[in-house]
Amino acid sequence: MSEEFDVIHNPFDPLDGAVFTAGSGPKLLMRPTGDCARLSLRISKDHLAKAVEAFRQDIPSKIGETSSTAGKTALCLGPDEWLLMAPESEREGIATRFAELSEQTTHSLVDVGHRTVGIDVSGPAAALVLNSGCPLDLDSLPIGGCARTILDKAEIVLMRLEREHYRLEIVRSFAEFVWNFLSITGREFDAESS
Image 1 (cartoon, rainbow, N blue to C red):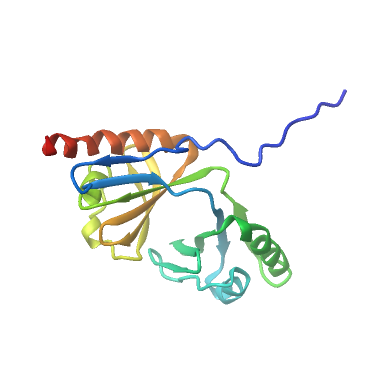
Image 2 (image 1 turned 60 degrees about the horizontal axis):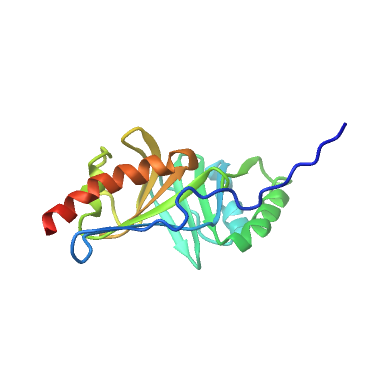
């Protein structure tokens, strides 16, 4: 007996519609980043130029660096590991070009969009709130830098987009936990304003 299953094209977003502000100004603003294509790339640095052609944007070779243009971002997370993000509309084209690349070089491109969500954290209190659960010295993380780290008990990828603007990429099952952790810490700034 065969069964039919419904295919879910837009997985449940645990942060759909969520926005958090705290303090005057506000000192802290958090919101989900929305959907995008998220792809985990593993390839030898010797073949990185071919990956750049397939992604159609620069891919940094130094761990902790990012490259962003035209809605695409590439993060170097390890000696042979990158997180590639692009508009949802470009997912298939990128996957097709990397599939063609497999005839020339060994690599792995895995779609991780179903497992990951993003949170933007900005404002004068952003670093302080993040450091309440993250061991990194955020003052030493350069603008355009990234790191794989933890926030309390959750593994995250942290990007510093501007002086007071960060983006977190989190495994979907930890998204509410991270959101609640940051919200609870951020409420202290509401108390200061009272």
